[in-house]
Length: 156
Length: 93
Image (cartoon, rainbow over all chains, first blue to last red; front, side, top):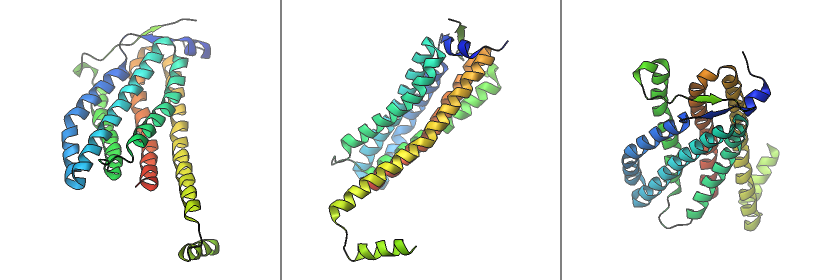
């Protein structure tokens, strides 16, 4: 039986959130890989590049964490709110990233090419890395037993 | 093409006020960043709308849908981040 539009918007999901699990995975991998990224930027752009790269990695990881927390928190209230939280969360996070860069743009230790390239490479790299594991766990669910099960609760 | 040549000639002749150039650069960089954010905004809206539709049709698959939705959102957001990086490099570097 398919749910109506009213049902869909009033539905909420309780229990462990898969977004948080995915985000935690990416943050762990980001922390593991960050010394290598920082070292590479340090070699290319010097000490300023290394500091900027560390700052960029922190921005990317916080961005993932914030996105997951916002979506998971909103999904516990209602799916309609999750839609709103996702879209407005996107705008809020873009504004926060802009603010984070704006604050340090004139700092003596900042190297903008290092900052920019690290943001793009880390963001995309972690996503592709995580995608591999998500694709495996979705196609072979038996391989991973701790996949969070989402319970559903109708509140009409 | 003719207008572009005229602009280049005026630039070479030093006809533009530096203050006006800065204002124009800031406006254009902001406009480019705004335009770069519109596409991912539309994409994320479409993605989440379809995901909610899928969750309403098949609630038992909600976990899978939410996982792929989150990855899709992050991939779409990468486009905006690329636009942002181009913006900071053009404006501040």
